[in-house]
Length: 284
Ligand SMILES: [Zn+2]
Image 1 (cartoon, protein in one colour):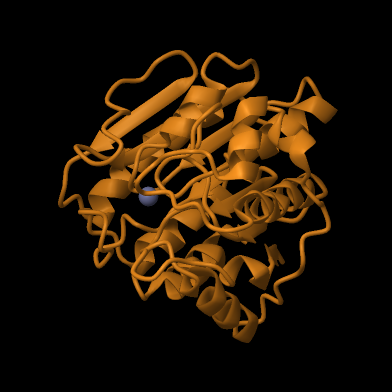
Image 2 (cartoon, rainbow, N blue to C red; image 1 turned 120 degrees about the vertical axis):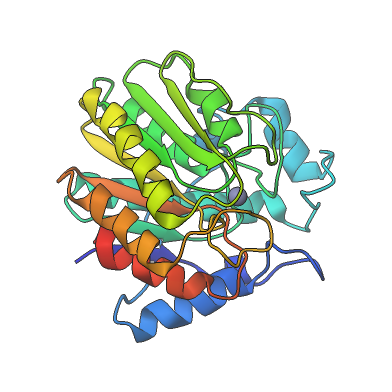
């Protein structure tokens, strides 16, 4: 059985009308708990030193003082601490994966648009990239495959892992769409842009060879940026995946037999909790 890490303090902040809203964690927590997943508080406590593995000192100071600027990414009070809490989930999920249990971090804010010195697209710290950097800091020879199935290109992650030894990254995303990048692959970063209207079967047809490419790099562990905004009813994306597609994505990742962990990125439809449940039905 897999492990779910969550902390409802990450469901206690928000801005009225913002799509990256508390229900994403709160209602998903309730549904997963009812389904027997028993979310646990993350045992790994992230600190500024973990953020500094990939982000600049100025970036951390900007989070603490609210002196960053991005129209999509609000200056919530205490956001630096909340971002660390979210990172704690990713670090704990990574540790659990290496210890033998597939794991999922159900936290917000998300992370895959955050770069070395920038917040962007609702993201403050790059949870997945930092979790991978921490694993490699402990085990320098560890090889990691990162798969990002959020509907948006994982531009922050790409910027942080490009050329990094032992990392292979694949992002499968809609294009054109925010942030407008991810049209071409380079070095260890594979980009698979898909047109608006792509359905679940067409998506899987593109996803499977992307996963194969990542597996060809012989990873010891898989890290997954699990965004659910490629869902057919998502207000931000234009792809047409359904619940069954997410279960299938989870199964394909599980069939690798590799240690694996996933971290919540986007996903803004009211069905998000059920999409996560379906994904974990395959992933665990
Ligand atoms: Zn997204």
